[in-house]
Image (cartoon, rainbow, N blue to C red; front, side, top):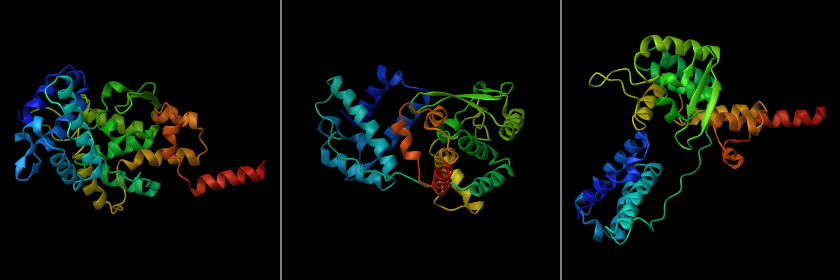
Length: 293
């Protein structure tokens, strides 16, 4: 009856086995955090999942929020999936996390300046130990893609002859085909000479048990933050802002929303609206076009 047994039952389910490998790793991480959370001196893993009260679930969620609301919401989402599995399999009669209201995270609007991007790349590419972080950032910015997808990019997605990359996005499972500009192409050709013998374009530079692995979604921001501090960049900046930065630059360049969607992989124009930040460049272009019409 321990919560650990319910989680293990979910791991044996078709729903879990049918997930992408990277999603499985994410779920395992979130559920590991959940199980190791202590409430009233007891780990959730040891509690009877059939009698777990909503109060305990609420206390656990509040504790996760202390580490970050975004992370807390991920943990709760996956925990709800496990309990819903238990309901379907008639292993339990209630989901104690079902009625807990999530805290909202204010949508980020931060964008990088081009000088900031250049500072990061110069710092990263100057040291072999940080070069792959720089390449991940470079690709995310250049192609307006999520950092998480760039850390998982594999060599078979690149075609140096046609100067194109085909990216299968993890969040919406959309596929985009994008050009590789000459500067980034030079970096990728050089990267292939160093890391082309294994599947990942920008893995962690040190192998583990003889194999190269991608940066995890949890450790990459920590390594990047240290690099950004050394480069003298503002603590307001995050690697995840690079996708937004690239899209904002396309808006400033008066790129149509349909073309932007071809780059970002969005299927609905409404999904692009959060990226359409008001900027001086965009406003100046609009007013200049008005005068010249």
